[in-house]
Image (cartoon, rainbow, N blue to C red; front, side, top):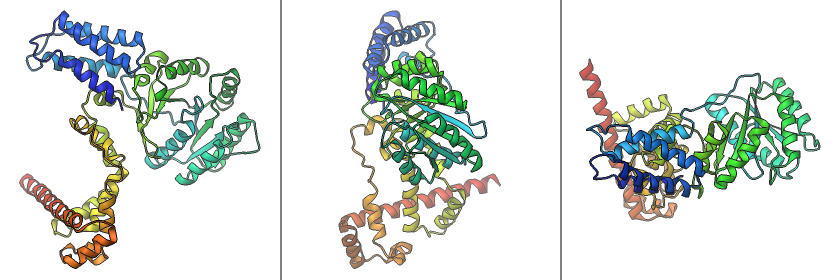
Length: 438
């Protein structure tokens, strides 16, 4: 996401490289390029101009510290202003209420139904909630079925009345059902349209009045650019929603909506959809997004994702095995599964500062581990637990069974051996540190 904008901004800052100090002339040239970059990313013209004017004022009014070069100071100021532009601080959703009611709004095709399921999955897996999905799109033929299929995949109940064409009555009945079945969050998926129309607005306003939800989220396709901003304004005028959800931010999007929408409607962006999978949903942190735009990575989100998959007891068990040199291919396979659960491999790598730019043209397949997994799964339980027994004939059988070659099997064995050595070194290093503290 934001790859084009990141590249353009990086080029803009190069104008100041080699300069001894910030002057009105060199800062004007840099910011002219920054403004062009923002406009090319589909940021609203007035917002782009106000942004660069503010940056210029701050840059000229601030002395360059001896520890900072002019280009570094400019990056720092732009980072601060980007963070402010996107809301400044993270704003969480309101889950108070018994049950908490979350109402979805947006145009047809914006991704409301998919997002509703993703949110239910996030609340269930990360917050221990018992969500209920409610099918209130009574116009799109496949909408109810789509929500039911997604709910089944996630083991999340879905309330639907396929024969009922009154969304207000369905929503009210769903809340009553949730109370009876101890569902503490109700997520109401409403109908979208191909364009904003009075009927749709009146209908969703009636649902809002009947339910009095804790949260109204406006779901918008980030690929629609400035149209997304205009639509958000119209919805906000009628619904006074609580937050924005940007979907398809992983696609071929210039990202202008994310940078404009907060200023226009004065409502926080709360979530961003970053892929098709049900766990491809990120909570929106303005400062972290500014880090990504400026190519600084997002190490905090990377650590958070790792912690979500981290099992403390399993880690202790693994540490003991490593210390005793008993780390085997079953353990190796389990570690691969944990990494895969964290998300798209290229996206994860891009969160490491400096790596994103280096790998932007590298095609990293989501199935990068497929060959490794096939090789391990072609081993017998005895071979997985005792890699040292793998001789020539066993390797040949494994290569044939996994659809790979002897070279690939040998490469994996070498990598496994190196990984084991590194883990033992790390473990013994921690042990020495503990001993010194005593």
